[in-house]
Image (cartoon, rainbow, N blue to C red; front, side, top):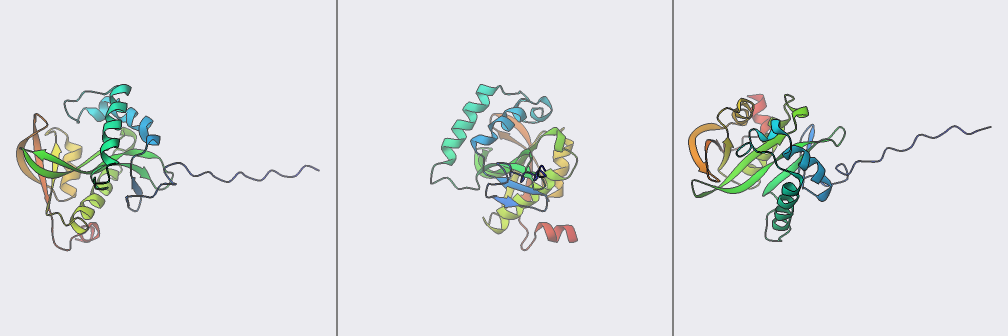
Length: 202
């Protein structure tokens, strides 16, 4: 008599096996690895995503690969802090990659600042994921890094990202020069003792 087949154990995805940089109720923020390259290529090739990034141009595979290699070499330097750079945003429920978000050292108006930014795939829009990731990054910046201010760089027409910026406490700070372009800038100021939970309760 044939034996019933045993169900195969579920194999965790590559994202589920990695140690998160940050976790939230629904998300994990992970250090980027070569396993993420195909996902990043898809993000940079999507006109809906790139519309609000830089000059709005999409990137081809070779450009993304070269960019990844440059950033990877920089982030592997022992002197480079782990927090400085985009993290891959995944859903905790299934390990699916849905975007990238992070804290980045940069220069705005020729002055050193720390930027907070986020990009999500269109399939993840409208579900509060960007706000959830940004709140976690903001709280880490203020509580762990002891920063006093974060900078948000936006296109003035990008209403969705402006809404996210406001939800994390950002206030308008005029325009500024950033990577050769005039951009809309917001500031997020530290509030002693304020966390995402505190804001949700207020």
